[in-house]
Amino acid sequence: MRWFKASLLFLFVSPALAVEDYILGGGAESDSTDGLSGVVFTDVGLTDKTRVSASLGKSAVSLPNGIDLNTAYGDVGFEHWFDPVGIRMEVAYWGDADIFDSLDGRGSFYWRNDKTTLAANMEYRDFEFDIFRNDVLPGQDVRFHAKGIGASANFRLSDVVSLSLRGMDYNYNVDLRLDSNRRIIELLSISRLSLINSLVDYRVSAGLGLDVGKRRWDFTYLTWRGEVDGSTTHSATVHFLTSMGGRSDIQFGLGVDDSDVYGSVTFFSVFLYFYGGS
Image (tube, rainbow, N blue to C red; front, side, top):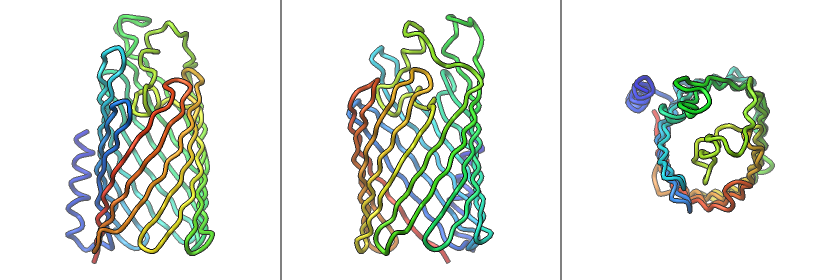
């Protein structure tokens, strides 16, 4: 993780240089199962067509069997717009190095104008699972990977209304469907923060945004199916963003998950955004 921290340090101090613009932010999310996550991030415009970004996050959740899971996350991204097409590339780390983690590569090719953005998205995930130690494969780590392909679209329907659609489908090189008496089931999620929620078969979302002066409402519906157990989760979230004056915003989020595995879970988030530039 040292290179993620170094990248973040560079990006946080780079606004002091002659950059086009930048965003600094951070926030936290808590849910009704006592799960907690936090993240800090930055997005820097090196020119009017080139941007770099990075983030660091951590989450914690306690399972009913007494296991406490602490998950780390970090990513670094690069984007360039050639007008009217652009590319975005990103590398990310996610997970608990003692149990289950992944190193991810993501790419996006998009076309956009003043009202529409259409994108083709790809992802490669390299997983390492240690949960089988002293069980199925004593003393060995289990390695496997997944390839994801999808698409997204954003439409500015009017001066105040926007619509977003996104979908991603994953193919794994191993069969992850397991019997209910396997120890891996102990990691089945009690919330969206649990490790097993990273292994999805597909993910689809739709969002509606409303701009009202310096305030913005976002309504999002998201659904995904788990690759391990075939369970389905439906999620609905509302976000409210408002100006704090000057170059800063605050955003509140409230949502609920309805899962075949962990039932109904409510979550709440708060994020701060700071803007600047030359």
